[in-house]
Image (spheres, rainbow, N blue to C red):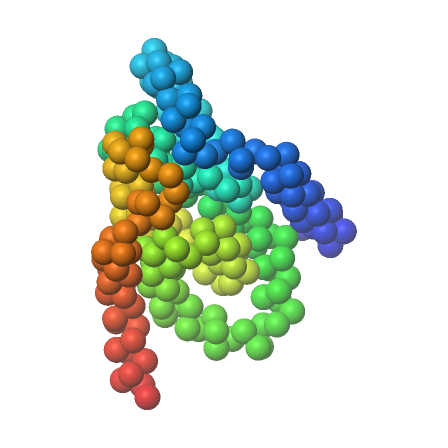
Length: 225
């Protein structure tokens, strides 16, 4: 079992890596303007080395997600432009789920396990509710892309939610939003911000989809009251 000083050191290193990458401006490179500027070079590389390009794309997406680097939306749009919607959705789903799992496991092993042990009595009812409806709550959060992805990853790692439930709800829950952003890659020239992609109607549709996943839990709570 990892000792407390070792866990603290790992936590500090993880936080330092995130801060260093942010101050280094890595996230600033992932902009729609930069993608448009280099789209011909990127498209040529994808055309000549499609398999390698897809592998590097998934690897980059894992790093961006695991280290909470801004720019995932830009990468998804770029993936749609470079690889086509279907391939981009599959690549993003794999990369984002794996990156989210790394963030989840980091939070769980560095903080979550100790938190659950120290406050087991206080968290008992909360954990019981998660056992019953945690999967629905996670799906709801994933279906609505306005919830910060990195925050859901981190906070989930502090709970008792099993890794397998976190993985499948993430993989399934991000599919609708991923498809929307990947499809937007077909209109790369007209996109300036992520807000240009998520129209009011599109966001409303995702919210309604998310609410449907909560209905069984809401009915069950109403029946107990």
